[in-house]
Length: 593
Image (cartoon, rainbow, N blue to C red):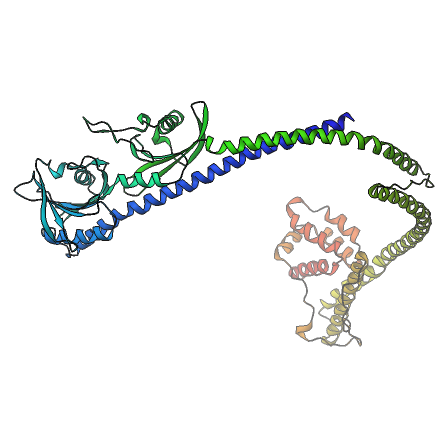
């Protein structure tokens, strides 16, 4: 009973524990999805917004290079920039030449489009004009004096230093210090690589701040440079820590606790913002609680390298989880108590029946097949009882049937075994007797035939008759070898031609139909001539008589340096191709003659 209660308690406890773990896992997955979604939104917004200044600059650069835009004609530049700022949602489009002259089109906070112009000889004065819908000046709005040289401003100076398209550092407008912007600047050079000026397009950082505030993140989102300087945030944040020297604020000095703690956590974890190479997600402590943080690097091909940091408080998700946890614990306790109570009652009743069932099955296993189990009112137990009874009956029937089958199969196997052994012995005896009975005289005939064929005293007709005998003898030897091979593998796999023999011992084969004799390797002839004449005569005699054992014995006397000869003779002897040996020796004798 104790194990049953322990199992129930363990099952209920594990159910509650896994429920809590699944809740935590669900929270982690939800936070991951939220972070990925927010990071994707911010990334796409940055890519879309920061692509506009680059596109405008490329359009203007192309117009300048093709001569459609004259940098000395400020009126043409003014009209071109005015049309572009109406088409594209940017804050400023401007141009300045090395002489310090400047023309810029500005979109004010109320949507009005203004013209800002600085011309020689008054390079420290900027005139601001209002425009109509077509971009025409309709009146002087303001004159700003004591303007710093335009060539010293960040958007101009950074492009000249890079000598290539580049993003400026985030800077403050001189005439409107409350505005922060970043400029995409393109230096313009003529064919002689002489600087003609710099064109630039500004994006307002305030627009990026507003986008981050509009995102429903439930926490804080901020963008930081690798140096730690803030770029934008979802909270109102002063960009300058000290207005006296115009130094920008660092994220670790933020007035908002989550931003400050998140920045410090990243510095403590990585040592520097520059060490963050890929998107990372983890939790970190804030005021005794742990909040979720994700940092995602973002770069473009023109030098921007920022970090997108998303911080979501854990409390945003845990309230409902904690309530579900309490409910789960109470339900688990109730289920545990109920299971234990019902288990005690059920186990006592079932143990008695199971004990009886075990006793019956044990007696059946011991061979007492007359035992049966009583029926039960519960369907499952009654099915089990009927199954045990049916099993006992079938075992009883199968036992007697198996005895009969075993006796019958044993007798059949014994008879088949005896028959197979007799057939095998008969086959072996036949093969042993036919081997020498057929091949020995046949090889002798072939050997004598070859001797007569080499004789010069025979008439052409006799030579032809001996050739017929030799050819048909070879056919007969091949047939015998085929039969022996078929007998060895136990299966007939070869078709015998009806014309293997000359039925009348008359010439019936054309030259193309004659069986080609195996070629005599010049190396084998050379090796064989190195053996003694007596040894060669013994080999010749053994081959004519078809004495394969004698040939194998003679092969064993061949020196090691003539291994090729030994290998070839062994292969011919094992395949009963004595005619090859005879032919080889005959060729040597012909060479001697």
